[in-house]
Length: 137
Image (cartoon, rainbow, N blue to C red):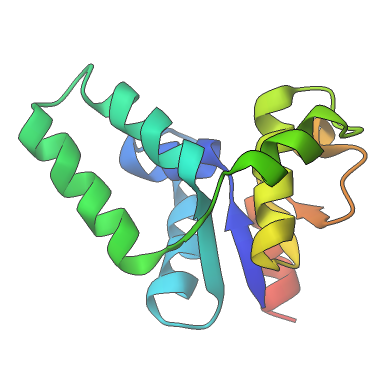
């Protein structure tokens, strides 16, 4: 299975946000164990860098990014992704970009805590707990 992990799930792990961290860590474990092929959107990386440098040194923030890109593939954001996102049924442009980048990368689904924000996606959309239940069937 090929999935795109939304920024909020990554932040749940990195910032240990309760009560979401356990499910998010369990999703990360599936990636680290090579049970799923997982992608992050290129914009997720830049967003995470920005947010981490607000609370960590630049060196620690970059170490966190290096760890992420060592276990995740990166879904490209380019002109076709942006153009398709502009015409997307998804209202929030950032989510539309993520969705289109995932489609271009050939993912099957998106794992996000904001499933309602992806209404109109042609991908399957799961929150982390739903995704874990799907995998563990």
